[in-house]
Image (cartoon, rainbow, N blue to C red; front, side, top):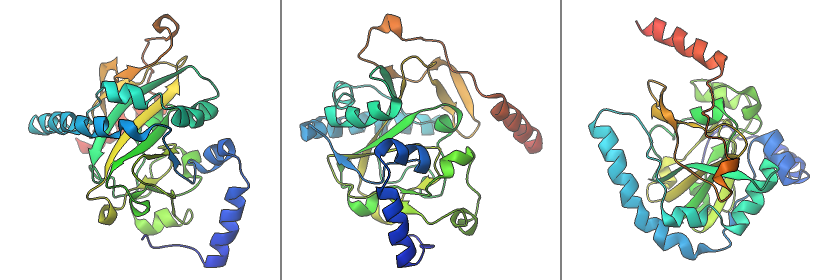
Length: 266
């Protein structure tokens, strides 16, 4: 459990305020839906677990080449779960459209990279997207993501110290996570995993955006913050002629901050 929680009466008041919000209000104001939900068809889980070695091999290939990257792969099972009716009911309500693109699918075991530290996901920080985490194996309520509600509105990375992060509010863990359940969050919200409870968990991460928006570019190296001139792998059930293929441009604010960062390292 994370430190820095408020008094029980304050938590009860905050929970009551949260529960008075509908899902769209929760997502916009808090940056995540407080409770996980069951997939409509969990029978896809064995096929997804069979895909895990593909991601493990791809990640090992990146690491052996000195590249800091996340493997994004499309498989038949991922196509199937991306269209799960229960999942889409949540995603389409938040996107405000039934015309969507799912991009960047990634199956990971345990807590990847430095995800046990408070962080934001760079792609989500730069471009609007919805992140969905689906429990495949070893998932328990204790292994769900912790978030600092409302910090997605700051649109910046969290401070480096735990105390500074917690000064922005008490952390909240998405509830009722388990195998065959999913939760939804805006990965601009300051969030972290709990490695003590995530060693054996296997999770599929999917990302959704409006089909009418430009495509998210494929990240080449998340340490160097470099991108390939091609979209991250994506899937959409709608007519491809109605889906733009132009890549989303990096916001000028990010370009300038990246340039300053590189100058400081020289």
